Image (cartoon, rainbow over all chains, first blue to last red; front, side, top):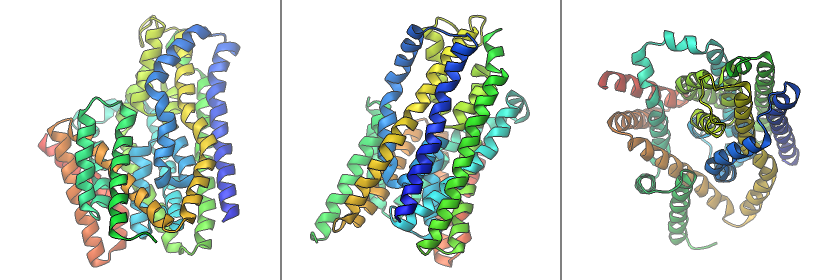
Length: 214
Length: 234
């Protein structure tokens, strides 16, 4: 156990650190080696405008998804991206297919296997697509392109039912809270978080009332 | 040099390829580590194979789903930076927003003559450091999150509560995401509902008849069938 946990943190942090290094190296190279420097005042202004929208998410998401992803899953998901539309569904599907409990030891390892495989398949599809680039849009018929936006409700609906099917009342609760949160003027990052906090506290409260404290 | 020429410069390709190589290496590394670990804690070869297969199948739908947005980003920021930004954490809508904001800050317009190499460089600064935000926090916070989870699960009843939190979080996240999609109008509601029915039916049949392989395809089939349905309805 010790060794696996240690190795997970070591490789996870090493690969992410390399990713961070490259993320900083490219703009520095463009500015100071190639000489296309936009000026720090401009960088600061633009970054501030961007961070005003995104910064909270940097902190909220890794914490919020940790109970589902586990350590290894978090390192992979927050590097490969596509968390809510690919990584979380992959975790759900694998745990269901193998029949293990989420957040158990087995559940966490199954999740890691699934997310790793998902990350690889994602790059396998994405790299050729981006190499083909704009040419691709001329090949895919327009009628097919039009249904692409509907992939999201399809993924979300299918994953939702997998969990809500077992706990239908909580499913109804989550949808109701989801609707309320999404029509109220709540900042984007807070929407899922509020929903999680509400549904999980109701679940724990009801669970406590059902079974006396041990 | 124009901004778009810099955007397709070999240097950007080199950086983009390097980061993709690390992402792929990471996935292989964790795959082999967790395979070993799986055997230690009593998962069978069958279980391991099934997990990998299910993860791979599940990734197809979402990966194909982001093609259009990914490709539309290419027209704004070029192929290699798109690869670098879509291939790692970040999402097409966030990246295009970041590109727009940066161009605005510089008083330029993407895809026009005012899109100079300096403006492109500014976009790279904002998008790359913006994406690194998640990674930096993950590098620092994950070991602590792990410790917190260990402590909680050591408490009496702790494992049970953590299980509740994990499945409750999933219901809540996807309830929220789904209702947000539903608010986009009829075709979204229709697709979501068809996917829900297909997913429910597949899981029901595979549980009833004990057809385990069906579950590997559950999400893939649900996406495919609901998209075919909405194609004919809309």
